Amino acid sequence: MSQSPAILWLRDDLRLRDNPALHLAARNDRPVVFVYVLEDVSSQRDRGGASNWWLDKSLTALKQEITNKGGQLVLRRGDALLHLREIADALATQDVFWNRRYAEAHREQDEIIKSSLKDDGFNVTSCPGNVLMEPWKISTKDGGPYRVFTPYWKSLQNSIEPRQILTAPSEFAPTKSIRSDSLKDWGLHPTKPDWSDGLNDAWTPGEAGAWDRLSEFLDGAIADYSNKRDIPSIDATSRLSPYLHFGEISANAIWMTVTSAIEAGEVNEQAARKFLSELAWRDFSYHLLYHYPTLPNENYQSKFDRFPWRDDEAALIAWQSGKTGYPIVDAGMRQLWATGWMHNRVRMVVASFLTKHLLIHWKAGEDWFWDTLVDADHANNAASWQWVAGSGADAAPFFRIFNPITQGEKFDPDGDYVRRWIPEIAELDNKWLHSPWNAPQSALDRAGIVLGQTYPKPIVDHSGARERALEAYNQIKSG
Image 1 (cartoon, rainbow, N blue to C red):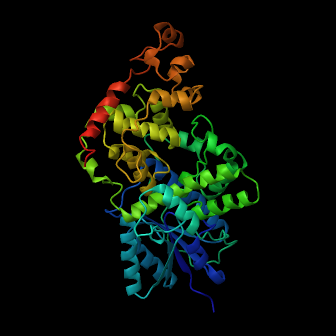
Image 2: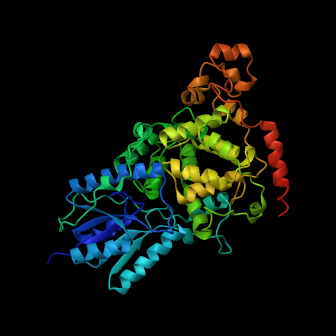
Image 3: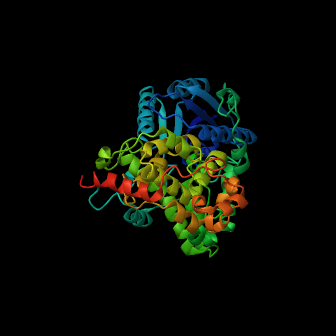
């Protein structure tokens, strides 16, 4: 007797390999119908433009892979519960599988759908597929959530139970054909204008692209990861964050692949452990998001509710467009706009500049990153912005104000990064590259620079901005 198909509802897990929900759904060669719903739920945050671009390419790649193996990916838009019921009726099945999500709006939505389906006699199975350890499974000795990363990282290493990487099915049994939307009709790819050329050049979305990127990292950059990961001009980081965000590769698969390489002596252990700690920061961010669900919208430290943030639209636009007059800041913001990604060291510098030099609320920066980052993530984006702003858990102290001049000189000493993204000052000597306003007129003339015309003058003085920020903090630090 043939089995009725199982429905696998995909969300942030657009992969076939190491997919726990797929593994359970496809047991005993059971037919599986993949479903992705572009949900219209008012309580959920809309994706930004860069994330929509990635989603379009990721679903295209996944659909092709599933089709090549004899299966089908059904695309629907709107109410997920309605579409799941309709598809289940068409397939004459009552079995639905998915991997869990952790943002509050997602959890509430999933609970509503699970309860409703169960009330109607469906069998619903949810799995842990998107983090190393689910947020409620790790706690302090007092039973509460962790608020500081270092002890969290120590506890995670002691308690993690990684599983073997689950293989992808080699083929899928045929099922009844189900109506599917056309991905093109969703309009995820930008038009009028199509600003995505830089993203196309920088990325290969999809599961295959994720594994290729991990292999390249392990074959090269991981060897000097500890020493070179802060240098933005070189490819010394994993650049796996967007693949993790869309679930094209699992955190577990990365953990197992890296630890296996350590055990085999194929990678530098110190560098690899440092990389794994960065992977764990992602889990820590989800830990915080689960226990403090308002993290993307409210200050983790309530004393920052009294902070005298400034409303300065002109300064915000200058920051967004990479025209602050500080080269390392402007280079980062231009890299972000062109590629949908920014080097992590530079992310800290530009975030510090917005929140401390300009005294603009971290939420304005978080919103901009949400729209422009291909790895825009509910947990990481909010936790990291609050960390830099000083308002978050385990936050950098507010008085740690990055000097954009010395940060550029230290981490881009030869100016390769700045010259790539700010070609209008590329001919300036290294001595002045990170502070063009200090250059003598003769040096500016040789480089063809007219400050205020070909490149902006600084929109704020570093020393004065630093003093202003510290004065603002003094108003709230006793709270």
